[in-house]
Image (cartoon, rainbow, N blue to C red; front, side, top):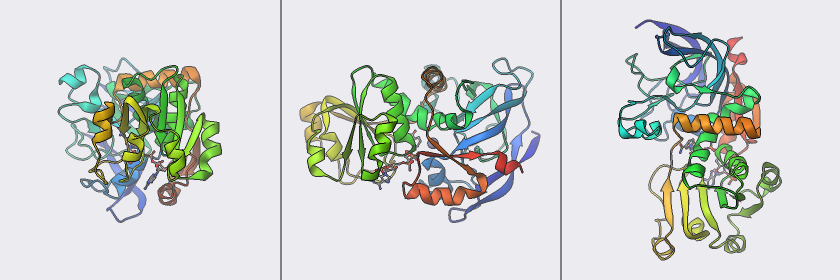
Length: 352
Ligand code: NAP
Ligand code: ZN
C-alpha cells in the first residue's frame, strides 16, 4: 500500500526524550478520512506509552489520542464526512466490527482487540499505529467523530479521551439528578469527571491529595472536597457515595474509598492498571453489596453522544496550550500533578 510521510514527534526508545521525526501514514483508502491535526491533548497514557510503563511499547512511539482537526480529503466511498468538517479522533481507530461487543457499539471491548490510535497494529500497513503528535492522520470514517462547531476546538480535544473515559462509567452506572458521585484525583480525567457528572445533575465530591486544588475543584463544579490523607475528613463521608471514579495512575490503597461507598455502591478504577496493594478487603464489599469495577474509554457511538452533550451544555476541558517542542517539560510537570488541567498541543508549532 502507498504511504505518505508526515512530520511527527515521538520517542525513539523508552528512555529517550520525544523529538521530531517523520512517520509513514497510509494513503487515503476509499473509506478513509484525511485530517489536518489542529490540536492534540496530552493524556497520562501518552507518557505511560512513551516510557513503556505498561510494557509492550513499540518504537518509535508517537503518542496522542485526543485529536481535533479539519477534514482535508475523503475517500470515494466516504459518506459521513466532507472536506472542511471539524472532527475528532480518540483512542480507537479500528476494530473487528463483527464480534458481540462491536455489534453492541462497545468497540472498546472488541473481542478481537481494538486498534489503538497509537501503539496498535495498523491493519493496512504491517506496522504500529502512530498517534496525534503529528501533522496529519488518516482514519476510517467509522472511527471519526463530529466535534460540535460551537465548542472551542482546542479545549474540546481532551474530550476525546479524558471526556469519554469518565462519561462511559457515568452513563453505565446510570448517573442522574441526585446521584452522589465522587472522583479520586484532580487531573485530566478527574476534572472532566467533575464537569460531566455535574452536567448529568449529580452531586460531586472530589478526593484529592493536594489541598491547593480545593478552589479550582469548586470552580470546576465540585460540591465538596475531601483531602484523602486526612482521616477525619475521610471518616466524614463514610457510606456516602453511589459511584466513585478513581483516576489515580499509580498503585494506591483503594480500601479507604470502598468505605465511603453507600450500600450497593460501585468504585470504578479507570487509572491504575495492575495488582492492587494493599490487597482489597472483601469484608465491606460483601457486607455492603459494594463493587470494585474497571472501565476503559468508550465506544464510538457513546463518544459521539458525549461530544453532542458537551456541545449542548458547552462543556470543554480547562487547558494549557503548549508548543509541540515543549512536550518533554509538559510530561515532567504532569508527573508532578502540575497541570491545570490538561495540556493541549497547538499543532501549528509542528508545521512551522
Ligand atoms: P493526570 O492528569 O496526571 O491526573 C492524575 C491525578 O491523580 C493527579 O492529578 C493527582 O490528583 C492524582 N495522583 C497522581 N499520582 C498519584 C499518586 N501516586 N497517588 C495518588 N494520587 C495520585 O492523569 P490523567 O491523564 O487524568 O490519567 C489518569 C490515569 O488514567 C492514567 O493512568 C492514564 O493512563 C489512565 N487512563 C485510563 C483510561 C481508560 O480508558 N481507563 C483512559 C485515559 C487515561 P490529586 O493531586 O488531586 O491527588
Ligand atoms: Zn488517554
